[in-house]
Length: 83
Image (cartoon, rainbow, N blue to C red; front, side):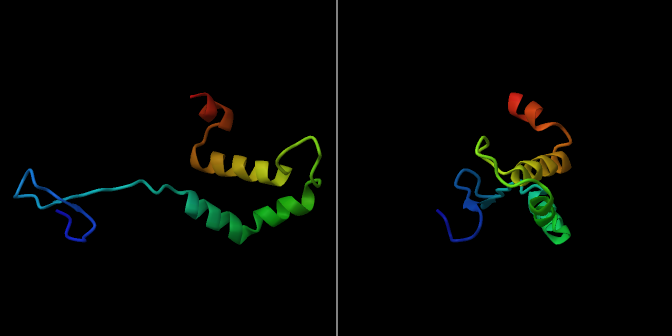
């Protein structure tokens, strides 16, 4: 039975009425905020060439993803995709 709190009731063990559920948030929100305060997206947009018909993503977006990946995982994105 769920009593509206953030846990689930434990029917199997009356001594433990709740079960703790946790999720890993990670550091991406912190890195995003840091890069936003530094103005990295605007800087990349100003100094990199405009869109090219041959590519599906702007260069500034791709570099932004790579910077976030290196900040969080410290490995190349290709290695992350291969695993």
